[in-house]
Length: 341
Ligand code: DAH
Image (cartoon, rainbow, N blue to C red; front, side, top):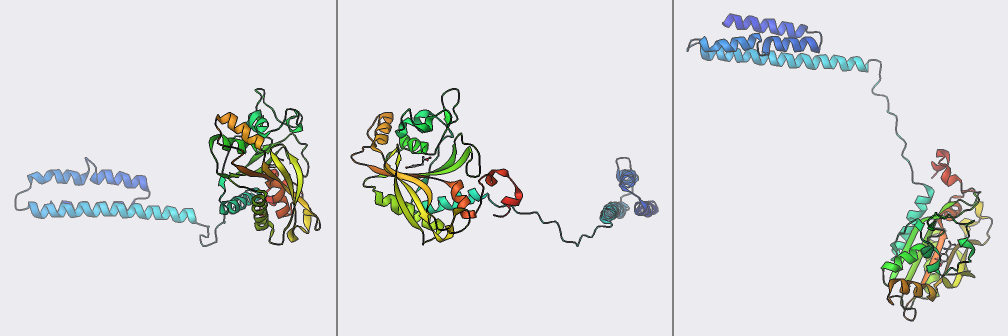
């Protein structure tokens, strides 16, 4: 039996070394170690071996089985290595790889993030509202009469059920006051929609930033301080401001904000001209009354609370800051444009 095992080992190791592929190797494994394999057969015969031969033959059998198993593993690894080498043949794996280009945030998103960060420092929280709005939230609650041009079919996207794509983010002032009592200090960025002819300075969908601050004792001084701080952060400390009296239905008094700053001296903004950048004002008490009626309480008592509101277009600011001459570049999705930011 010693000799039989020795021969078996020699034969098995030679066959394994000569195996040409994984299929041949698998056949060898079955032939030697499988259920009716030769080594298995020998181990079954161990029960007939005499008592004194058993330990020695048992150890030898184990050695042979271990050696054959190791040889099978080694040959398998070698075959795999050959296959890998064949696959890599002709490929220089030391050449540098193809780097994937990292994208950047859209210029309007970048400005949005900066804007939010600046207002956060002044304690403004983010608020939100739906793009598809009721006429009440978009107009009535904002003290905008039925014959106001903003409500015109020609200027506004109405749905069959009477709702509409919000024409401004001022709707979020209303949404916020409906569910929160003063003090309120929020900003609300988002999309606004108008039936505008699309050209270099108009899109049918654009991005606005709304702000609302309601508390006791809020004054025009707070409004001016807040907006001037914000725009100085954006355009530099040399920025000059003009709060030009204007009319908005939902604020009284109302202003348009004009700015002049060194960074605006060139490019699309034109040389040193005043540039209109925002609308704002003190919340009209009539808006508070609308909210109280809707809420069924007097949380926004106009004798106790005052507030300011403002709104501006982010696309326009992004154009100014990036020197982009045509607003349509922002939506064209052209990599050659976007990759510059
Ligand atoms: N909603 C106005 C617009 O779309 C902008 C605006 C003006 C917002 C004055 C305000 C404000 O909150 O007080 O043109």
